[in-house]
Amino acid sequence: MKDSVLVVNSGSSSVKYQLVDPESGVAIAAGLVERIGEPDGLITHHHDGVDREHRGPIPDHGEGLRLAFDMFAATGIDLTTAGIAAVGHRVVHGGEVFHEPTVITPEVLAEIRRLSALAPLHNPANALGIESAMRVLPSVPHVAVFDTAFFHTLPMEARTYAVDAEIAKAHGVRRYGFHGTSHQFVSGRVAEFLGRDPGTLKQIVLHLGNGASASAIDGGRAVDTSMGLTPLEGLVMGTRSGDIDPGLVMHLRRSAGLDVDAIDELLNRRSGLKGLCGVNDFRELRRLIDDGDEDAALAYDVYIHRLRKYVGAYLLNLGGVDVITFTAGVGENSVPVRADALAGLERLGIEIDPDRNARRSREPRVISTDSSAVTVLVVPTNEELAIARFARACA
Ligand code: ADP
Image 1 (cartoon, rainbow, N blue to C red):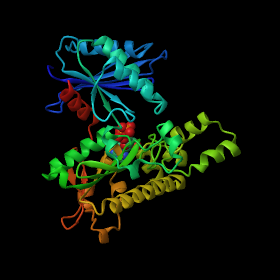
Image 2 (tube, rainbow, N blue to C red):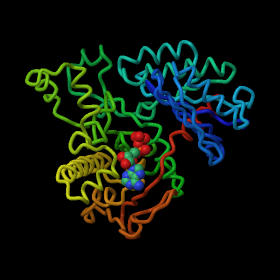
Image 3 (cartoon, rainbow, N blue to C red):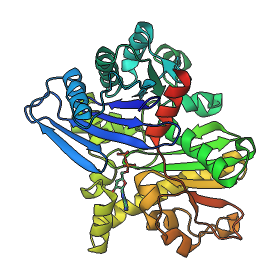
């Protein structure tokens, strides 16, 4: 247990946690505290192949963590005395301030709170989780790992919106990018897997989960990404629209009479695949398509069309690419998405091998043909391990 790291990912009514050995990458235990603040709170704790549950009211994040600690104790792990090296916290928005993992002081916590204006759905919840965890584990260093940090290198032309420059400056309006911990982890694993120096590789990483983002990475440095000021921009996602004409917002305001909160909810929670065909889970989407559902077929086509647009843009901006990598729930598991995203690109040196693509594995693997000029990979992401390693290095 010594030198392991507790990774905490705190949402508005939930806390995901994992105790990780940053050396071996083994997840010693993991769990989820759900429905905080509601009468029917639930904790699911997984350790040594056994799932344990706690049901009952969980008034706040602090109590949720205390109850989770009791579940650790029930399996023989006393986190307060186990000698863990650090607690690593996922923080969504680091703004212009945080470019790397940072040991949390009262000033850092205040700054994370101040950045809530840019991430109102996420940073307040992250701050709450940090505060609660610092109270239950006061003598261990707590480290914030920011979702935006990897993208602080975006060149000016990729990070700048073509809007009034003074307004943009006054309100922090620029492209920040998200899912950075995953893009950084996966692009690093790619170089390791290929036995190449990351400094020599031009990469496109496609993180396709419920949230989805693409990135262009040149010599280890992020040069473009599909998410922007918020995680709403870019690819079609489970429940988020991704790119739209910004005029749509004004149109809905004027014609449908929706206020800003209603539009926010519409674009973030009731759009994307769910908005188009009623389901956001990719497995259900495929089932609907197999049953002949036309809305689901269109949703899939829109998803693939957008994805190809980004791959094309990044191919051009990078001036050619060495590796394209699929990761996260959909990217790691959906054979048709990988095939359709890169179909018919042989003249660009991209050839998927159907048998390799159809093979299932939890390990990094090549799915392109031996003659493909561009190597296409599937590399499982592991954000918890990445956060644990950053926190260990910082503590
Ligand atoms: P997030 O972390 O953003 O919640 P994940 O990376 O866990 O998301 O990905 C969730 C998505 O992955 C869901 O849409 C789910 O349907 C999809 N997914 C998981 N397993 C499979 C599978 N075997 N085939 C197709 N899609 C899958």
